[in-house]
Length: 268
Image 1: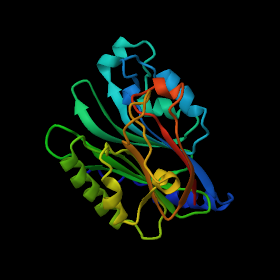
Image 2: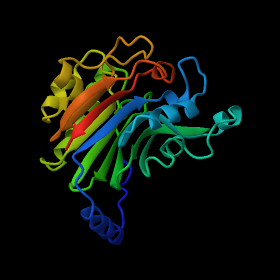
Image 3: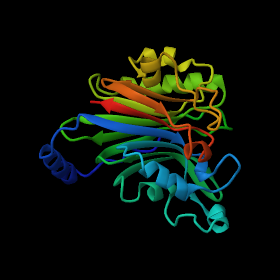
């Protein structure tokens, strides 16, 4: 587990005073996307197009999976490869705060999960939930401060491909949830790889419910993006309500990743 990254006590005090002067936030919009490291399923680099598409949605919090922190070889191959990390490039001036959990590290770079936020990030930690030696997976737990509210817990996940691995990882997620105050708002989003639809039963033990199941009685079909058939991506919440859950499967989204993004409005 990477250490928790706290704000300084003086900065946190200033943050609290600043947030108390702003009206309380009642609703926020979130987006989750496995961005396939900025490439289409046919290996075309489309990070600039992806940035424009995400910016057009007016979301307050963005959950990203398979985002590069760095990659030296790809930077040499593509003229539009950003000089910063992919998550900083996507955040730009729209989301002033971001957190990153590095999961996979290799000679030329790294990738993992990221959260972009319009609200201040108080602290974050990356929980290593890798099972075995082949798949490197993580759970990025980020604590936000929305105006008029106490801590909001935003958790970005990317679960394993094997069901046996996912079962263990979902239990690790439950263990994390149990350590969060019982009344705190929780938003969990990401690529669960749960095509057999087993996660709901496990996470219900933590009093979590899934946004699409709540609204449409079934999880969203999000993979493959051009012809969504499998329910891989999810949005789970606790102590908030959800509405307007959408799968963004039309252009340009159908051509920007192998996963279609999910978007939902959260009522705090």
